[in-house]
Image (cartoon, rainbow, N blue to C red; front, side, top):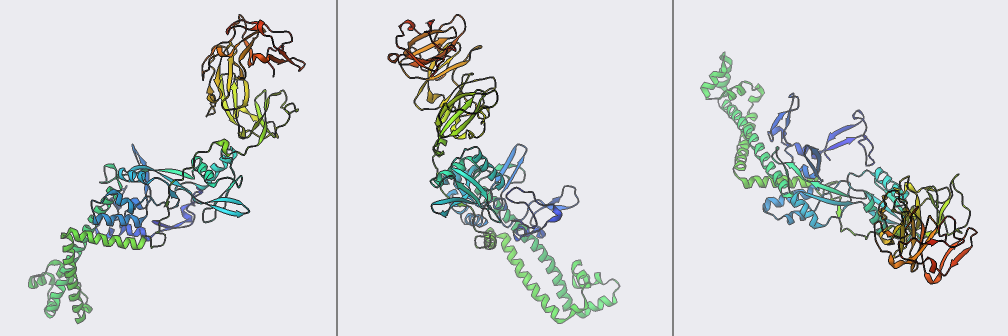
Length: 640
């Protein structure tokens, strides 16, 4: 960190910091290292925004702060997002570049394996992807939370998250996980608790001790910010003007070149200071050699300065310095100290001239400075150790929602007005149930919590609902339209549990229909899947499982037609073919059956009737048919 703050500066929960009047701040040693040399002409200065002050164009920077602390920002038409890194690793990479300017990118990546985020976590991005990101300056880095399994005894356990990804707010993360639990998208997770104090401790409680922790965390990694992708974009202004997406090597090289320029400017500044001081010292020494004469001139001359300059060949600076000397400086000891200082400055001046004339010496000096930075801020220093670790992503195969749900029997109840609920257990289907005033039961059937329910609307679309997401049976349930995007004007034609491999007969009120494999109508979104295409005022009115070798159709005109099921095509979507022909009205109902067993239905009294000889009603598809047998239901529907 560059700033040492005291007071409330916000936290990982996203709470706002206190007002500035309640906080204090001071620069850390790292910030001071960035500014070393500002008073030695190490960098250029320019006027600030209102021209009242001068500010440095760039800081001298004893370490590559751009990479060490990272940066992010958005400008017009460009953006940058650089992750933070470990300063010790960056220094090692710089030292290696000094030894081997043409070092391979792979070698640099061994020294700087990846970002080091202050919040820790685990990077699970493959090494090849990281290498490509640092080579091109762009890439995505997968960062996961750090977690462990905590044994509670007696076979019970819980997961404890101790580090969350960089820039993720803990409060929002917990809200998201709680939302996943509420919506039953992670049914194997029972609860989430925040037990954090100064450190992070988020507890995840599984629904059962038989849950696989890797499966649970793998699901949460996919559905929450326990895993994020940090999009790295190292877009920088290398020359202060032109933006460029740079590789790791280019940024480190630019930093080293900058440090060399800083070193040269500081050396020249020091050289100028030494020259000025040597000039003054030589004047002092001349005065000491002719001390009596100097005192005489000063006492007797009205203008001693030009006399001193003329008699002893002094410069104006030397003469002014002599005239400004205090009497106590005339002691013998002072002369000896001046000679020692003069000799030391001569030696230092020679060293600086050698430094400025020898590029190799300059790089050696820079290497020495970098080692000092590593000793002060590197792995051996407090807080300098790497916090973010690396691991291979233990990819857990995406587990279907059904596999995560504990299988339990339920009874699905849906009313005519579209209120749906699930009662625990398989209750008798004829049991009396309560509904809202003016409403009544439309569908009641047995299912399992792991089932997917298929709903056909009169608009010809099939919708898929997870049985585990159905509300409990204590109340009246919830409107099914909150779960799927069924239009208000559309009615519910059919609702049943999905059975893989089964086929369905679907038909419209216009008398068109076909056979569709049930696996083809499962929808993945709330919007459903259009299966039966409708025209004009037609609506979907039939959806029955295919069981048998013949089809029976009855129209609104009470005419019945029976034909072989082979005459119907199997399709995944479409209008279908004509089942029965009508002069007026349309199709009321249709079903499949086995001809040898006869056609059955229930009469108004609830008795099952069977007609085995159907010769009178046999025909070809799209025929008109004949009047239905006596006792056929008045509503023209085959009741099971």
